[in-house]
Length: 368
Image (cartoon, rainbow, N blue to C red; front, side, top):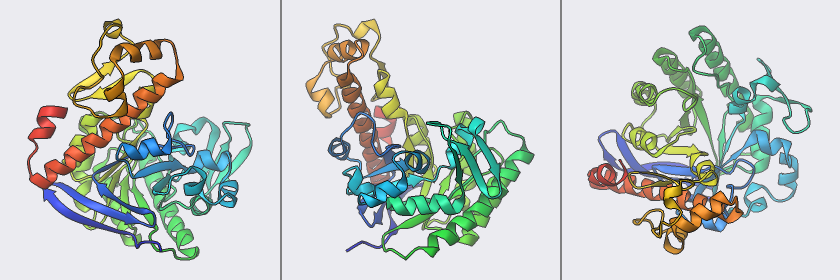
């Protein structure tokens, strides 16, 4: 039987909180980092290897899966969990980010976003209702509303228009979500927009709360603003998010971004950085990064991170990884990615321990 969806805070440390989220496909601790599996795969990793890093929730993407292989096909094949052999929690991004990232192929109206497929140029209409339908067909445990994310360089007037449109789409998303048969353990999150304008962020949050969602995400960040700007927005908006709901910072980020956001009360994160960086030869380690392509590692017999117990660090040297990446061998991407995802999960566990013990020395001394 499916579990009910719930979020419970067990420990706090100033603004930070440690908790647990339960969904139809199990529970996971917070703060958490969700590896990104945009096209039904965390790149260069088997699902069982993702699980072995400590991750219990991953992210998929509505836009990419609706184009290939299509939500309808995945549904006929048993849903996304079965399709990708991941029997644990899945959160799906609604496709709203692609409205911005693929803007040269997109026309936005109140009805939704009209795309030209980046695969074959076919015209596709993605509306709030269609986005929710796709996420339902995929079987997402956590559905995201369809929103319009715009660049932070946009004017306040354009930012406000996009925020208001996102609120209209949020209501339509919620109505569409409720039109499907109620399923225990599933949830829908709202997305707070408003760019770098605190007053717009506050309005967005307050209006979303009136609609009512199971959790609240902060979108439109990690798109070119400085870390100081991002933290300033978090400081201004977190107090308006209900304390009994999960807070999800979308698309973030680097370890220092995550640590700072956790200290400000954020519970959930996702980002392509650890997988993309791994494929490109960058490893995250305690107190820094290793760019394994550098010649200095060509005869380095040390592991990537002496404090790491991941498969890569326990079995391979920097010298071997340097060789693999320089030779463009697939195994290099696999081993580097596996380490990075493991490091991120270790970081989240250290953050949870720091909150539980109300002691941040481990984070300050090991990760910063």
